[in-house]
Length: 156
Image (cartoon, rainbow, N blue to C red; front, side, top):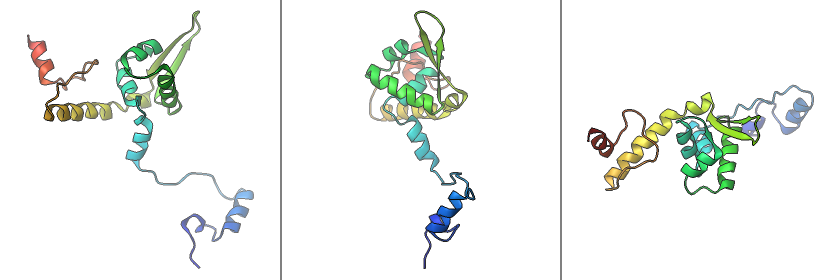
């Protein structure tokens, strides 16, 4: 008789069921997860990486994000922000004012994704240049990542 990995601990499904009912099994999830897959699931939404990138500049209101995350409908932007909030990457702060004011900012966990987004910026710049495209981003690139065009404009 071959036991599957799920039942190795107790030997059979019945033993596992009894152990659960008796409180002998903990519900700790010890399943191994792929870090790349998890990262992509957190920032892989259509606008999530852009939202995080823009919030690197500082807290923003919904209307500000709606203007600069082009192409996102209000419904989609709201959904993406809620998912980022649920994943503890974005904090939603509601001010006790009339009219109500809401700002979105990065949590410390959200700020920790900066190196990944900066690497994406670098990689994307190289890709665009290699394919003869002009690099341009509404948000100023992180220090040390300016493109040649931006360096020339700053020198002029």
